[in-house]
Length: 145
Image (cartoon, rainbow, N blue to C red; front, top):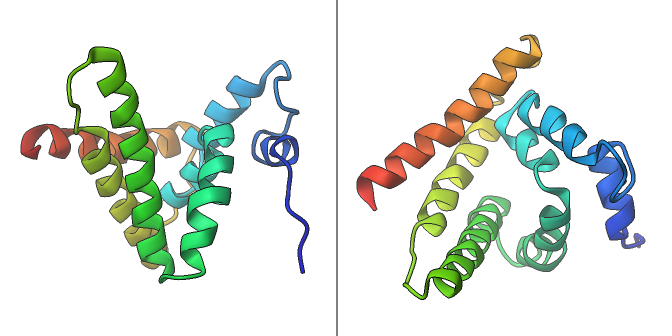
């Protein structure tokens, strides 16, 4: 049996600094953008949001479904929540983040499955690769949604 990790512990593990500490945002950006794979990018990106998605969506789904499908559905839920927030703010139905996030989930799964790593590259190159994957998914979403 394992102990449930707290939000504070999760953020410290992901950012290297305590929740709300000075440098938290900088650490998140450095660690996520400079991650050695697209899969790891998401381990560091927005740890507060990631904590709740992991705890309330990914882990329960992983117990019922194959991990790949749990990842896709977790990204879909995240996208749907982003779409819902924009819909509420604009008072106009928005369906944009859900397909974009689902597309990114496919990239997470593919890069993990094929063991794509750019660990040996300089931080800037790793950041450009991670940003490029996000941008390509965004452009495809723009084009086809």
